[in-house]
Image (cartoon, rainbow, N blue to C red; front, side, top):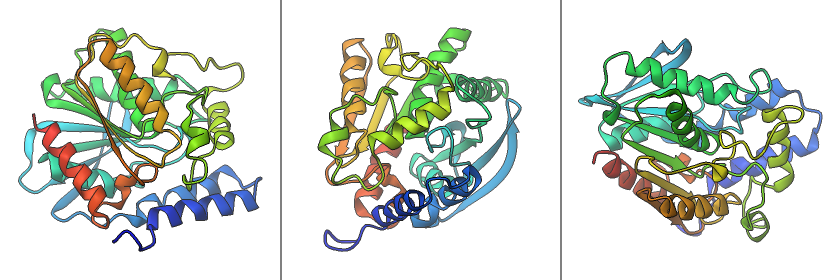
Length: 298
């Protein structure tokens, strides 16, 4: 894909926006069905087996690259505004990350809102982590990985694990994380014309569904920009320069560094929200995943 060819992820997002705008009363099950096609733009990763399982009482999907290091696991949390997406919509995406990292991945199918309001999703992810530790894997050999709302969960699950007295994982990779439920970032305005998916109004609508009536948008387990970040393990954030959520990543990175966390921020110019979905299609996505894979091996 060259600089002048259409971006299939941008086209997918624009199609979603057009369909949901044309049908503002679209039933939730229909919106969820649309978002199950997120991975349609992702090339099938080679040499991967997938095995359905359960962890911490939740459905989960093992991603098993051929010859993978079975002493390390990427514990993966899918995006979708806490309302959409599944372990199946993100199967190929996390297959590429597992291959790049040379280890197994486990995608958690946490219960979504509105059926499972906050703090339900983060509690589910913490339960999955606890269940994984009970299999005997060393915490230092686990990395939390997530995209969008799942990127936030990769961070808030750290905070919840700390509250529960669980040992923290070795690393965290967050792609385009959704970290401020107040939606105050300046890139909601500066990137509004180039982000094919995001808009402040749509983001706030997800927040209301996720938190429920009277929910606290400053709860650190929902908006980790308001959390005590001291003592967290190394964190890598990768995001696109055209994403309206870009400012969430910038602010979190600055706060984490100020708290003494080994935090790294990579911004890929001209890229959409979770551009990693173009794995196997876009050299930019492939390069970002390759860098993340090497970082996860450390």
